[in-house]
Image 1 (cartoon, rainbow, N blue to C red):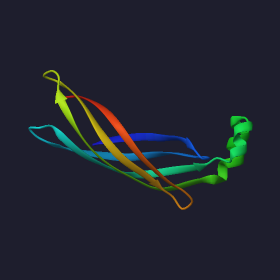
Image 2: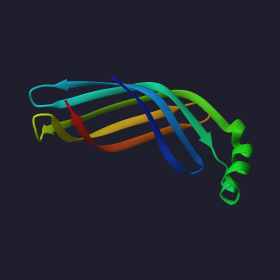
Image 3: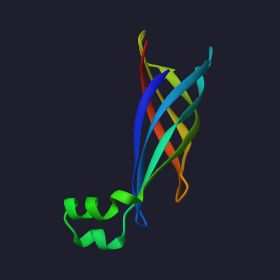
Image 4: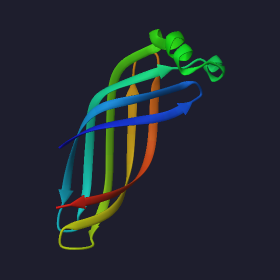
Length: 116
């Protein structure tokens, strides 16, 4: 189990981040994995005019536009042992942040490194 923080790049005037707990299950001996996340997502609605403002001015203008909500994620992939202690792999993840005013969905390709 791990605690993670992720972020999404601004797109169409919105961005966000999440605090989540991740649990991974490894299916041996092929070393496939499935994982799931549950946490809190915070979405930030940034007006287009923030492009022309300083960070402080934008922060002041958007401080009431932050919404907390649910963060969910699922993923799957495979790792290959490259030594007695290290495995490298690849996977795909689907994540979503859901708040009253915004929904953010992401499809991610992941590269993994595991030390065991």
